[in-house]
Amino acid sequence: MNRFGTTRGLPFTGDNVRLIMDGRKTATRRATVKVDQYKRLKPGDLIYVKETYNILDVYEVDNGVFEYGYPFSSVPKSKPEYRHEVIYRADQDDEESGWRPPMFMPKWASRLWLQCTATWWTERIWDITEEGAVAEGMTGSETSTPREDYELLWDQINAKRGPEYRWDANPPVRVIEFRRIDL
Image (cartoon, rainbow, N blue to C red; front, side, top):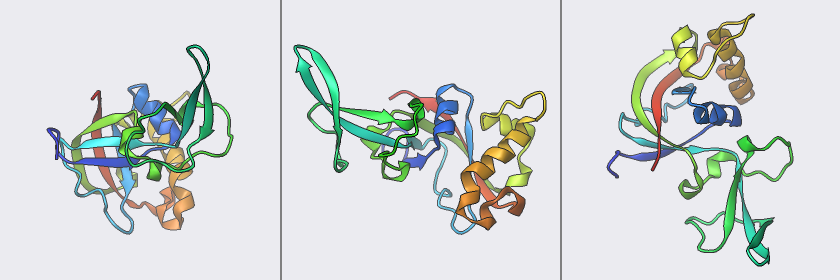
């Protein structure tokens, strides 16, 4: 336990990481189809953002000039004492392989920290309002509302998990509101 409460990691996609970094995303909805693993999250708890990443060796090639080396073969449980660099896929334009999935990101490698400000009862995804979609980082366009954009994003992220997670299935979700903090 820390001064904020419990610390938990939550995985986010690259698009959502960028929305958090831009200050446009202040809420997340998590499907609770099989198990509500988010019900223990309470206001005041710390959330470290787990995102697609890799860890590279850094070595000196000339006096004071450093270059990236090879990716670590395994992820250390604690921050390495030697030179290294954590890189994040959300910052990269290319689609190269070799990234590590968010679920395996250690806390020390996270660059984004959030404080939970509210957790809501489970609702159905169709219950999201325009205001809720804006809190999810959606802005809409000339041809769509924030809620319609969120519907598309929801399926991009969740449809591959199975038919019960698709927007059309109207799955139950836990709403988590947060604010970004610097530690």
